[in-house]
View: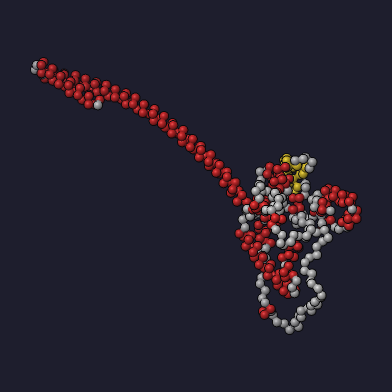
Length: 386
């Protein structure tokens, strides 16, 4: 019966009903009389975007009002109103300050779909149209990204991309969060708690009328203790006692007893990892980016160090080459200067000798003057070389 109720596709539903008929024809007859759209997922309306086949919502609300449920009707309604008035305000404030864009429960569902999408092989048929096959190759579904539908009908019913759709979305280089239904995003969540339950004045401020007062009903006290706890079903598993030890806690990650997933030593599942980070995706991204940038920066630092060493070696070699070149150039320049000085001295000597020959009266005086001039020019050359 569970297989028939939880089947998303009509073919799987028919197979489950046939198996149920083989096991118990009486149960099959009783179940066939109930309208299918009230208990089977494959017949649910796709506008509601829910696949719940149990009454967990009503059970949660029943537990929420448990302490005022057994009181008189006026006190009970007043107590429920006070709890809902405060709860709606807390939800509005929480939605305004929340760091998530998709509600926590459905964020975990999407992370699991991402995990199982690795076992699917998508093939494109057209823009937005994909054919997805599982790893075994025994199931193939058509995924339409524009219509947001999948052949398994899980995306159609729940509004959350299934693993087939996620594999096609990732192959198309898009983000699966973009294809989540608006029912599970922050704006719709805030809109659900937007109505304000206004305070109601007490009985002393009620408007007085001419009509007779309403008398409270008369209570009849019966013998024995009142039944306050819910009557459990015949096959319902009883809950553990309140004084049970922590050793009975089972880890949802490794399935071992004695600890929770928050202290588990094994690698966490994607849904539990995002739950541990309080459903804030940027924290996980920041950790990954930190690890990436640390490795990236360390690689850049090593590269810069090696480049610095190479540059130092090149500079040293260039300086050594420049010093040798400088010495060579300096020697060549000195040679040119000396050659130029000698030529200029010879020209000056030649001119002076011509002048002395013209003005001198005797050859002895001209010779002695030229010798003195030569000695003075040699001293100047020695000073320049030094």
